[in-house]
Length: 267
Image (cartoon, rainbow, N blue to C red; front, side, top):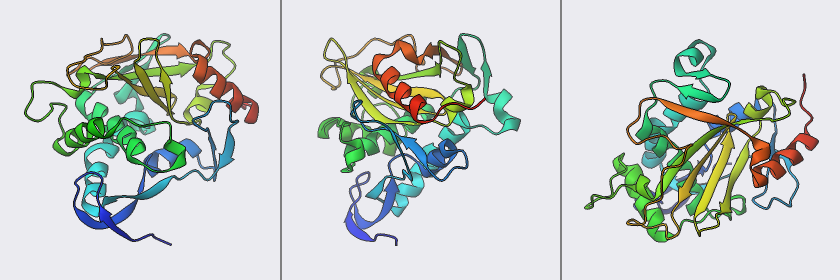
């Protein structure tokens, strides 16, 4: 049954009938399932083992106009980026031994697409995303950028990506035992990991990539963080996403080892 709730849309603020909005776009979840009815999912608590479920987290968040806007403006681009058709795959990226080269890379569209997912996770009240909370001030800045389709903060020379750096790496297996198809069909839900200097990394594993945002300690404009080696340059049309063994990342290593035990890879 479709839930019909009257309330304030989280994106535009207008009172309207809210759609049952998906935090992670349904089209991405469907592709990660790879034709299977269920998906291996993870808790934000790395000590909780993964489990297979129908995983389709949604709740009344957005009005019909904003739901359609996010799909048209950002989600279609994200699907083409992460899950190109066989015909388009060679046009979209090239797989090299140490990196994946994205051709015709659209920096702002890619940034805003992933931002839309992390923003929805932050404003969500679902327990799946309890670990993600940017705070009201930053959530409002993120929403304003999504509505305007730009990373410039209104009335300021500051850009959102000065203190929220997009990070993107290709996950690999140092032992060469896990095939790329296994990574493409395993999704790591939105998680966070605190840095040693008070910074914060929020990440999502999808399509064989680990995508995240590196946020300054204050999470506020005026506190820039340096661009990481795995961050695309603002305005860039080409991006080389480095290949990183999942074993090199402690928290991801624990999650994927648990997933590997739950679903042994097939040849």
